[in-house]
Amino acid sequence: VGRNPGEKEFHQAVREVLESLGPVITKHPEYADSEVIRRLCEPERQIIFRVPWVDDAGRTQLNRGFRVEFNSALGPFKGGLRFHPTVYLGIVKFLGFEQIFKNALTAMPIGGGKGGSDFDPKGRSDAEVMRFCQSFMTELYRHIGEYTDVPAGDIGVGGREIGYLFGQYKRITNRYESGVFTGKGITWGGSQVRTEATGYGTVFFVDEMLRSQSQSFDGKRVLISGSGNVAIYAVEKVHQLGGRVIACSDSSGYVVDEDGIDLELLKQVKSVERGRISEYADRRPRATFVAGGSIWDVPCDIALPCATQNELDEAAAGVLVRNGCRIVAEGANMPCTPGATRVFAEAGVLFAPGKAVNAGGVATSALEMQQNASRDSWSFDYTEERLGEIMRSIHDRCLDTAEEYGTPGNYVAGANIAGFTRVADAMLALGVI
Ligand code: NDP
Image (cartoon, rainbow, N blue to C red; front, side, top):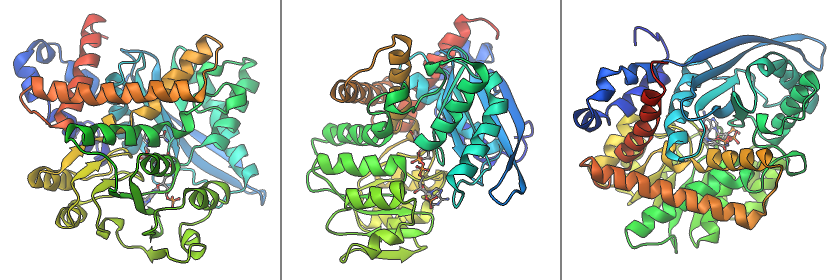
């Protein structure tokens, strides 16, 4: 904590991983002897830069840009960019740290990194977003590349932003280097299923959790917080698998729709019009909008927090448990506070952490990199099938590892230990680096 003052989300993420590692160190003292844990907590490189740009009124605006290149023992740094006013070094480092273990869990050749800016795209015109992205890339381009660091999207960075960023990269470098970015559009080097991957993968993972309990999505009531990229495609897949999503949200409040969330309307309001979730309720006679408040008050069988960090606290977890919720899986990164995870553990709720549950996004990014490297493009069905296989193997890896280290059924321990041992072994093999 003294070494990284004020970075509270980073401390939280590190603590959560370290708490799982006791049994690993007992079994493998070489990890302690080599200081591999301390080395893992120190990013290989951190870049902080000025991002000046001019708004539509001709005024100069200033933001701060970040890229934390955390660990490249397993492959090039890989992880998204987040544009949100809350972004500061502590957020980027927590996300980058999580990304190391998540990427290791996918068993694909990718290291961990993350970046972003305190820029707020909300309410900005397309032209303003483009000028911001061009300025951001004018610094970032010198640090990234197919074999060094491969960014993607995250909160506030979707297809539009990736387009502007990739366009500026191409222009500055005079290279059509598709593999430098993932999340690209289909006609300019993107992969089928990447847009859907994190939401779909989340639901594939939960389907495996249900299967391990001899259950299915059939008839289950599901809450999904957020209404962005992850949430929208989680809604779609839950409905395809027979469950019913009855509520979703944004930062202004939540909607309840007992008929099941209407996916087309949700996409229209949130992705096409970039509107507020209340506009969904305005156009659906039986849906209600609750301003502010907690979506976790709505009774459900399964809760999937898919918005942002620390959105589900101890009190909300208590309400979920009292209302009969039996499964919680993190589509977002670290959405549950430590107090909430404690409540779930004590109540015997099946709980799975983001670094396992939402790994389908980065895994499909790795598939996009494969396609770019071979100048190939795969069909939607084939790519979705690969995603399904990857999520099933991540699920089984978590459970097998939890069993091996004496904590059967504990997805948190399984994910942390499986991710850690993979990256730590690679670091030991590569020497003191
Ligand atoms: P989007 O920007 O597409 O959507 C974010 C959603 O969360 C929006 O509905 C937003 O509401 C809501 N939200 C953001 N901040 C808050 C807040 N403070 N309180 C309540 N709601 C909030 O982002 P994504 O869907 O891409 O990302 C969601 C989560 O999933 C993040 O934790 C991200 O790190 C994680 N993730 C994303 C991956 C991806 O492939 N996109 C991959 C793996 C993880 P509003 O519109 O009002 O801001």
